[in-house]
Length: 257
Image (cartoon, rainbow, N blue to C red):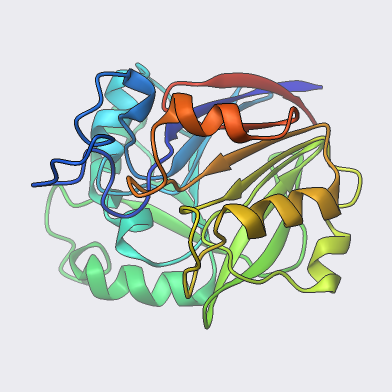
């Protein structure tokens, strides 16, 4: 079966342009250099899911004219990946049902802290309605769709990437164990984070991302979670191997699952 991936955001935690920044990337007129916080939309078998819902979640869904959202899959608990959860209220209103949430126990605890009113027993009118489905490193079934989590380390924080058929999406990785890399063997389309060119304590830089891509050996790879310190889209693209491209907001492509 075939599905579709739409890039909702390809930027790092502060997005591009970064507030108050006058660098050439933040001032670029190339629309590919306008990067909202990292997130993708998955259209699979008549269902629609997001991976992550950061601070730009509302605008991203409005931009892509999303009318149906069947669930949100969270990679980890950092604010640039969870801060938009409140906006599921619109889908609650139109569907008259809670939003299905798929996340680790760490993410659930963070949601209980950040969105305590969702879990309050008083159940104030109009608060978001969610149904939490706990996941871990084990494969799970998403309405007939086989999802394989890949655990990566974001410095000391576990983060989940996800493989769906011939496609894998990983963000906020600094190290990936050999055991987890096995889950990626044979993938044809790989998305991996590459913050910028110089080393970072919790993210792949370009050199590390390219080495990871070479190891996994997909037909096509994309770089995401991009900082304004990386450079302009057009310039970076000229420096990349033939099978590696930059994500940009609004990009879409088909996958098989």
